[in-house]
Image 1: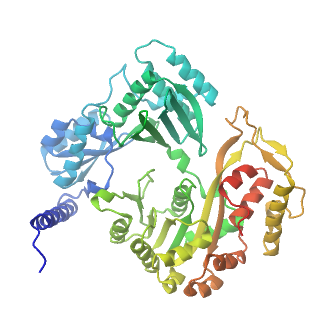
Image 2 (image 1 turned 45 degrees about the vertical axis):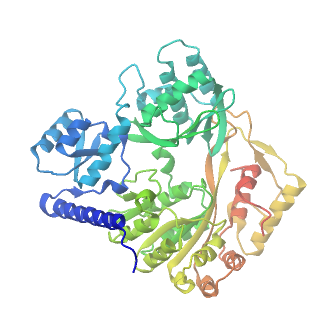
Image 3 (image 1 turned 90 degrees about the vertical axis):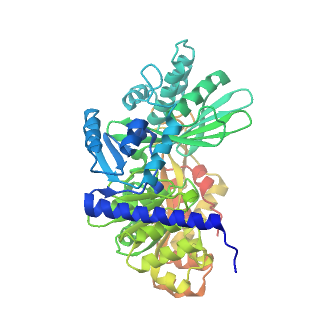
Length: 566
């Protein structure tokens, strides 16, 4: 007989009580008070929202502000009928807030109240200190078009003896990042200096170097703004928002200790960068028709594969926006939620609380969704439930780690998915990479080397042999080869000869030929042979055509796609 463990039993009873409370609050919210119920255990809490109501008042009236979107403040309360809640509504309205109230358990409220401990020293900063105003950043950014402009602006403020020059420097750094569409800002201390870099079109580029005196004050400002602990040197995460009109740019901040100080990265999540239409991704016309057909089906499993940073999330969001309708329910399970999509239920995983992709998917299925997006399939359980969901009337989008589209089926079988069931569930396997686009203004022509010409001609000739109509894309297997390269000096429209990025794609859809071989546990090579007969381009062919049409450079393509792979 197993030994009785009192601590485990107490924890089990505590968990059961919490679950019962959540169920009771949900029932009361819906049936008695007719307000929305919210469980904040799986929802990120925004520091900016928490600051909207003082801690002592929030605790006294059992209210917890957790999200702010434009002028709309989302507040969880324990007792909606309290007169103090009505007073709070009036007070917030006088401050310019439209308030949305939810009903929540005490455990949810405690999660928000705990956040006051972290931001007690980081209240909204008064005038003359650090105040990130979106309109001001846009105004500053109007004069920043290149790294040279940014460097000049920072060096000018650095030479100032003004009291608040560090605050102004951070404003310039953020303004430059927004103006130049940088995705990340890296502040990296080295042995005798500190390096500032931007990630532009997926590539890190040096901006300038500065001394440790500036670094210490700058990091303190970043920590203060993002709600991180100033005096603690350890792995920390924080965030803050910049409002530009009605658009929110969320800035995720990460600090980790290094040999010479804290390496800090600010990731800018600009909604404009994710709002890419399906037509703008760079998908070739034949594959585009296949995708459009598959994502409009009422059920099925569509998987995208590619390395980190290859644009998978952008593509999934483009799929969701394409099919979005008020008549269907769409739920996403993400890690983390990077961009908020209007009209869609988005949940965020939390491994510390046991809310994994698997648990998220199970919970989502209880909500009777039409479409589910799972951020990533990592384990056999998630894979099996995703496949079963696709068989039971749901359209499921997700990502998987394989090198190409042909590797999706063997990977799923490795994850113990029944191959015979997979035949009916999987509708489309897609792989992608991102390449930088050449600036159309300043790109330079060059002739290919004999080796490059042979390599590209071989790829095009094989495509023709497989029956693919490459002439529809403006190229021929026997044409004179001419390449374009980036102008390193750049121009007024770009910063390094490149401007923006575009996808390189391949996909294999489940047709009769593929259905025949899946139950036999086919190899990646077997699947690719079937895919070749479908007439869509693979990544090598798609990439070479984009190179010959001057969209990108051969150097860019070979950095993400192996052109010699059989």
